[in-house]
Length: 589
Image (tube, rainbow, N blue to C red; front, side, top):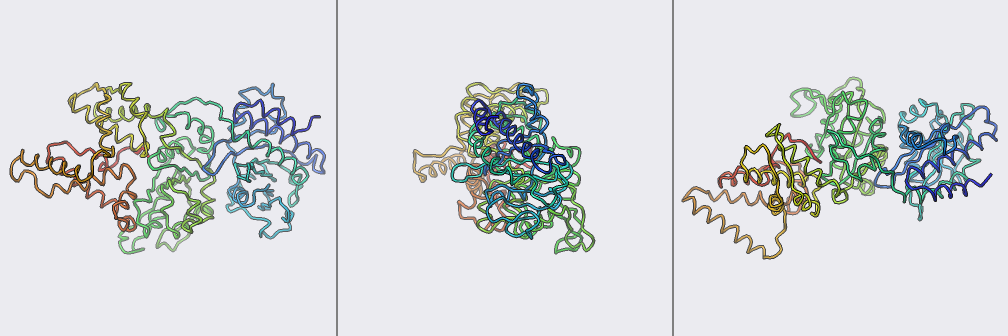
């Protein structure tokens, strides 16, 4: 029989997508494992169940492939495309502890599920059963991983790294087997380990370089726009949505993390239960534990009544915790306990711990690994929440979505006023939006559309059931965010001051109070907030203390209210940034 490595290379050269390369790799890996099992003392007492490929570079999952051993035994031509696709979406996932050990060691990991022990296969590592969970071995951080493996009749797992040049880790291959007779033993992994790893090394460049198979780009009410970049993530996301493990969604501010979290909730078995959101940006550090787990009356100063907390409010459903990097070290320890033990206690409650029947989805726009290195984020919590990491690319990398998002946002806005009305964007307007830079992502685009919509209503009248947003509406809307470059700042400020004086003269003495000029502070802060985000805008203008004291959202609101007052005094319906003051509007970030 031809050497497996030679066969694999021939199959990989013909592969045109990640899915095809993954299936070829898993077929050969499973075949080699079954041949080794057939020649071992466990031949009649064990079986290879399945293989999985997890393509997950540092930024998050890029591909997930699963192949059952039964399907791998069929000839490729007999399997067919439909069978190949079905084999790639089976919702089976590996252990967070195994991935953490893989990151540390960059070597194969053997898992004895019944003993709950993970052992690295490298020089100096002790065989299973001889280690006391020291440097050579480790126990599951969560009993859930052990229960999940046992629930699908798995007793032994071999996890192989997908390593690129410089030993860069791109993901892993996991092989699952059932052999109760080999509990406490090596099973077959050491016998075929080097050959399995060779196949993994050969496959890695193809798995990482090949694009995903094009998938149907169909949106829904919770994810209305799906472009090519997001479509490539959907197969893995649909699998992740049905899991109980923690899902980590990373990406820049305003990119759509909260919307994706809600979509995952609606795809899950918990969709009929609550979806709760905890925005850590708005919670003072000293109250984070209380907001998470609740409190009893009198637990602390100001606790005038009982509060169930976010975990209890999300009971049976999903809790989305956004901006996890803002969580204090003390609250991080509390969250880690909940994730590992599925139990918690309210502040001031001396009774038994409560069960946390909730699925966690975490959001961040920060580099959590840098936070770990700096001592701001617990390493054990980092690996516990990064079981299923997904990175949403910025809007700049999803230009095929921009026009569709703009149409969706305009239509949503119009139907709030005219449920039976129609709104459209001209082709020239859409082309203008596609060519713009969007550092604020979907949130910035939504603000531009809102302003253009308001300007169009001014042109057509507020009772316009049918409305068209022209290119000049967006050009005017975009000017509010443009950066002046042709004149010195002092000249531009003088022009603004002159305009204010002219407006006062036109209205007569006392019509425009001098204090209304303070609205310019709100305008400056509003522009900076849309461009940089609230925290960075305040830091830019020397208000770091407000950010640290968590009074920044109140300070921003005070300044924006001054801008609103100025706009009303000038006879305008609202300021160009009135959406920053709106509460309860549908999130886009």
